Length: 304
Image (cartoon, rainbow, N blue to C red; front, side):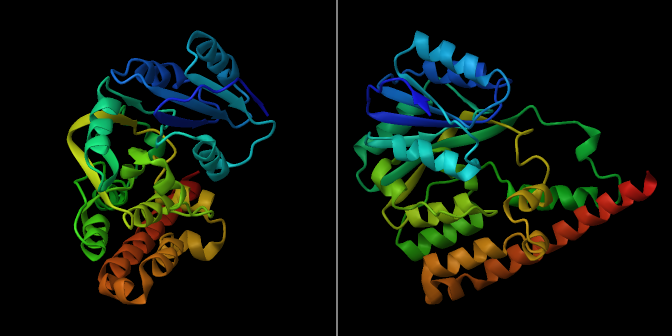
């Protein structure tokens, strides 16, 4: 594992990447154009096989705030995300998806919220998708297309609102109305590090945010300052994600069961039961979505 020397700022931006040559320029340029400049970028290259290494080295040579680390071998998705977090020694931290980009005031406006409100442990802006894929490989040629689109948007909401109040209220509001995209906000580093869950499953980021909310509130800026690439790893639907994260058959059929099980431990029995209606609905919708996807794939194979 190779790295250049570190010079710390007030904020660490963790950028885990694997074969990201297609997006790196846009992502890094958007970070370097931020109006708030007191930050470092920690890139962990997960043994990429494309031109990622050359691009990262080029940027790190141009700007001393960029610290490039190349893993000698692929350590996996979750360990790479946690690696950049553990490298942070600053007060604040944010993850950045290599296929996402932010507008010039994203960092400044979120940092203003965090530095002026001690009760706020995380801040994020509204997020908007870009470059929706029109590839026929992800389309469902059946009468179920509208239903599955609705289900997938249920799992991948890009909207959010601020979450405050007592913990019971925050849990309910987050589960029923906010979004997993909160994870790409800016957080107080020590609180985020205490909230990490070491296992990978569908909804892991939701579960980690439930941990973060134990330490304070999350603010959402009512303005789109971040853009998420819709053709990223989640674009293949819940079936693709669950097969990747949960290789056993039960978790593929019931993709939200590991998340539900984690929430039982995070929330405790009493609070979990208070939100039981949500978890029943979530697991039912997940099961139906999987069955539709499996049926679609079977039909595609039959046609061939």
